[in-house]
Image 1 (cartoon, rainbow, N blue to C red):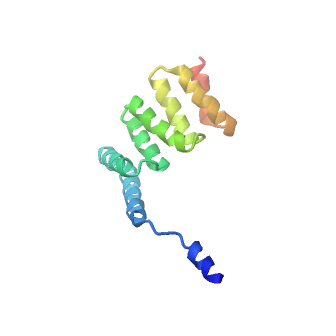
Image 2: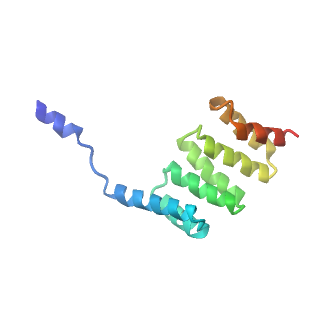
Image 3: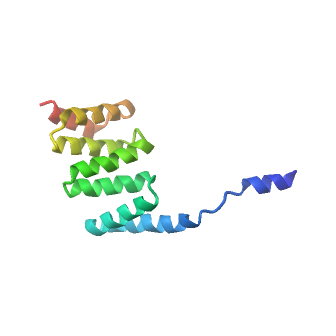
Length: 133
């Protein structure tokens, strides 16, 4: 019976896993170097091949936010939030994006969701003060 343990304990290797990890590393390097156009291209290509990576979705959304493409940023943050509904980093940038678009009600909804899991979040408190004034 011990042979069964060996048979089932092995997880199949994903041949793309190493390549994907390298692409993510490259993407992070481009962001760190503020090469946003190149990072955006790399990130969107990665998402086409691997659509469910919340980190890459967040990074691409963040780049869109920095480039003042708020509606596009929200799309990426929403996709990341489908995977992790309480990802506070995605939620706060989504809230800021809504604020920039003048959609204060939606921004407040994001803030309220963050407060459910992180009631002492300072960025949320500051944003809510701005939104409610």
